[in-house]
Length: 327
Length: 250
Image (cartoon, rainbow over all chains, first blue to last red; front, side, top):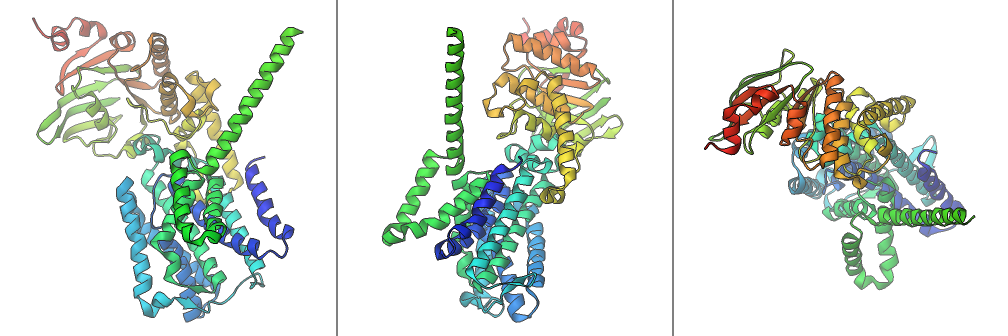
């Protein structure tokens, strides 16, 4: 079956709250993981597939979240209009930025996207009248989907899980497609991709806009879930965390992005008993991963498993062949 | 088919290609040779739009290529292989060749995201085309192997398969035999011939003289960016200017 992993993940994600019906831990952390995973999967399309780094991805997330926050609280429009306006704004901004930004490569692209993230953050803090400044915006109304009001942690868990699964399906669809191969091709060599008649400028723009749109949608839902947004959620550090999720799972791996998101989201929870050393251990884990598992934790794990399996199978067939000889 | 007239390219004060004029007839194997630094790679980069010629024209079946981007030139039916391999990493051999089929598909990002049924249909179609190209190059057996696990000689062929998958009219090959052993070079010779027999014009840059003399219909000798000689392999082998340029004159 195509995308078997996806269905397994869907089963686990949707089954957990059934297995642990009263678990606050599952509901709250699950929601956080799924939001982060949707963002990481979107960023992975840009970074892992197309090889274009972005250190300012929180900006698009912020634009989505603040669009929802401002439009629903100040102008009283329906959440869906707010969401659409957020998506529209993000399309415009990412489309306009894509051309000049994606002409840059490597460190220069990293610097430029970093700047983008910081500018948006400063904008959120400084334009107090519009964004509420450092205090943010509160009292964002509930979101209801087909008359189903999302007002409990449990309901948000389902909503976030569905968002993550949709993003994941979309990313997997792209992976083995003509466009996905085009992205991966320009990752290695733009000139070779162009000689294969791939419009690299257009391909890069498309993937940039797509990942911005995923971030925007996630942002809108995030704003509704928290009922409150402030610039603290969209800092430079959060952009770095997103990059870390993608790299930790394994660049170019959709499942890896979910793994990375789960890891980075849960780590502070697991380390909270040793609060003072949390940041230190966090850093240590990242360093070790980069040094010993440069392909990412998830991808290395899967590869090791496959090789072990392969070795076993090869051994078995060798043993069998010997047996036949003896007969 | 390809007509180059009065083409000049300068890097600052250095003239890499000077007033070069030659014609590649349709359906032939045309080779460009010359000592290191003669301007062969510059010539390729000019033909594929990586550089813009300072002066002169490049015409492919009546279309002016000078000033076009690499993408536009590729869409006119020009493809190339690279001297230093540019194989797309993290893919299988088949996927690499499927990238070459990009222009034969239509499904955009929206169709892809939604996973519409046309997507699977097109995917099968592209796969078949890619398999054809692999088979043409004798690579069917390694189709599903990741490129990171393939040896250099195979990757060289894979680049050719990928370029052929675009269905080009003109194929530029940049040192296809560099780094190959004698057996592999022999295979390359027959591959170049079968490409020409498939009615694709081949423009070849190569240092391996045996291969050049074996396959070429015409040879152009470059030296310091200028045309030193042009003719059949026989002419070139007996041309005094060429022998002097390669060996020095006594």
